[in-house]
Image (tube, rainbow, N blue to C red):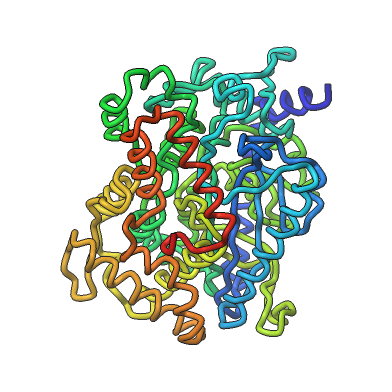
Length: 529
């Protein structure tokens, strides 16, 4: 079987050693190219990746038909039920911000039109909670061993996916520990396909500035996630045994369950013992950053890459585990290595040439550029919400730099604590921040005030007009005045109300999900539900 042979190639120790040698060579070449200006760009540019999942006409998880991936801007992901939508990059401007929204809407309409032919639909959500007919445990655990290699039925049979799964399972003694209420462990890395994300990208013109932007990005993750948390429940049937006695047990479970389950699920489902998926440490230089990626533990050697200098096939996508369009010809092994450098913010080297205001490629642009990939955010309920978080992240990162705001002086440990507080408590998190006056604060209102002020300043600095700035930020900023600031809080409150009215927790979760999907389909931004 071709897949099994490719998996064995990817896991072969000699092949892995050859791959690491090639990564080291490409890292040296990349450093040299950056020093000579080959990765300089003319302008800041934005793009995004948006993951979701497919459901059938009864709202149950379902496989995506293959013809949906014939749509431009639509890609496969780890699970057969996962779909990723991704925009082409635009130079940041009035037209660029608007075009991101228009393109994402167009891709989504094409995807949904194809899915409707199979009585299916794409859902903007951060975690599926209505399981397939077979049930969640069966779906996540179903598979077969072929010549010692486990093939999960719900995972796309891409050799790199399967090889990563094999390596992670072996390093965890054959079972992945999750330690979550309702899901103690899982058979394979397929459990990562429970959760989906939106990932804004920001191209930075000068690669030597990238470390500074990454360090600032780390300090914004807590506040931005607190406004956007959206995955507070596992699939409903996982709670049937744990919550047999009703509401009192359910309250205990809520107290133990994070607002943003996507984070621990991803971190634990890909943990091979070195905690590869984590908040990145601060970095001073691009050389140091490249060295960190090259030195990160290698899990598999992409079977399509050899130790030669002739390139070979692209490293390809690697599941939530990802394909970020790093198509710079000379750095394919390094790109594949960076694909498993699972940090919540990380750099991407290479990509498409951004479009300018007229919609054509930037005549001064190049595929050899560097961008920040902002990874901690869950998929948002609507396209307007998605563009909102893209604008917020873009504006804040640029705003901090343009105003020389002292946010970067927040200790790294405080930034990490702020992030995981948002994971646990969403909009009620104990956030950490440094104000423009250099004062440390945990006052959520003041933090949000500065967050949106910086976003406005940054977008203005990038040439976005005031009308477009307000249009873009409004869906997220108005969450501050909503009854439930983040979607996760709405979901928890909705389920709690149904349980109080006598529904079992699993039924309450399923009912809440049905209402959520209906409201998502309306396109109305979350804050106005």
